[in-house]
Image 1: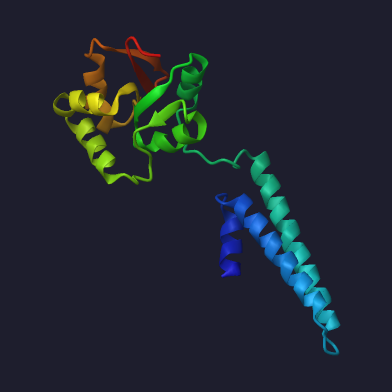
Image 2 (image 1 turned 135 degrees about the horizontal axis):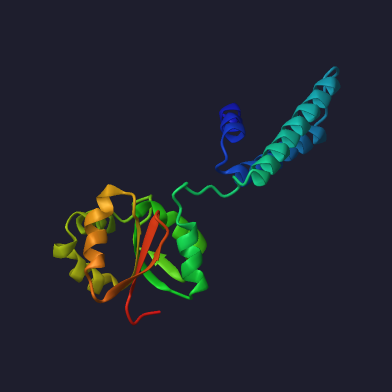
Length: 196
């Protein structure tokens, strides 16, 4: 199990900090516990090799962790994360409940919460919200007014290149109570008029 976890750790970037902290603790505790027990003859060399291997694993984990931080992979967000849009909202003090592309939700939670509260995220933990999200994307004229009132949305953030968002984008452009405040060709943000 440790070998599999170590392989995933060295090949990936998720959970690096957790993996490093837990395993350094486990390795040092097992070495300390082994030192407290009396060793039969001939096992002293084995204990030395155990320490060398553990120290080598700890050093490799530290190197891999520092490489990930230097490469900018410490916090992994999807390539389509709305970095510029969230910066714009924060710079202009726009806050509230966000109807968002589901893949934007994790980034919004990490960077914008509590000022920006996403409706859905990629985990789809709330299946009811996710089905409403799908309904709103597929037929906004039938579902938007009720959802807007129920959830009190004052921001809409959609990935403009995603074809499944076209109906809602077109619908929002025709709504007089909403205004487009940001569009970088990748992400479009609408704000409800009269809200912060």
